[in-house]
Image (cartoon, rainbow, N blue to C red; front, side, top):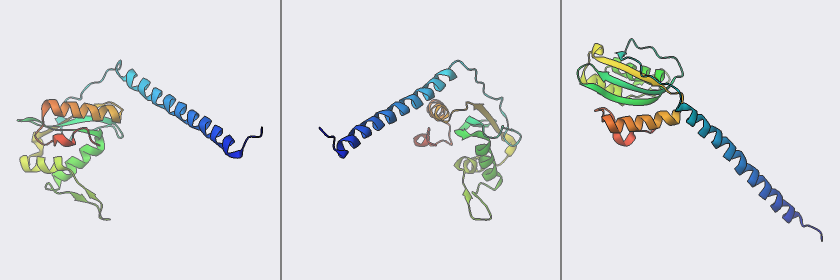
Length: 162
């Protein structure tokens, strides 16, 4: 009996679909193994330092805290630590207003605005961070820390969002 072209196509499509699923299983398994390996690594928060004096290696992914000398942790965030620190500090230094580039790109920071309103003295603001190297873990860690510490400048509904 001769196979119809459409039957060959269906068999081939089933094989391709199965291979696609197996490829994704392998890809996700590697990600899970990577996450599991993080458990055995040692991570450490940096000592709090003045916000404008803290340096962070470019492209470091992790979680950070903005700390007021008198009132403690006021904001917890995550992502590219150096970029986020620069943005918060930039808005603070811009009198609490969003920064606007010459081409019109707006760089906002609710944390920077709130810091400026709360205390305009840059010497009262400290910064601490932990480099994790995983966006997924950083997002979850930020969410759990924010729920635990309830920093004044965080919007709890935004915690854990990118």
